[in-house]
Length: 93
Image (cartoon, rainbow, N blue to C red; front, side, top):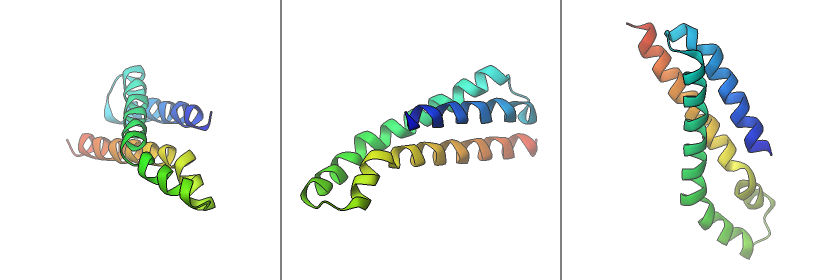
């Protein structure tokens, strides 16, 4: 549920920043959501299995939190970095 809310917020943010870079708003919003989901999927497939294994052997609250929610932070971080990088390059042209 939190991942879907984060994806919606990323889409809204990309939609609102599309005008600054001269991109079509709807396709830019969809691009932001796709970037978020791809980054979250990459985290889930690459990092979560190792952390989940460690969390099952030690009942650390931090490891359980990482297993459950870190993909959201990683997806948002990648979307923020990509939007900032692409808007910066559009502003300099």
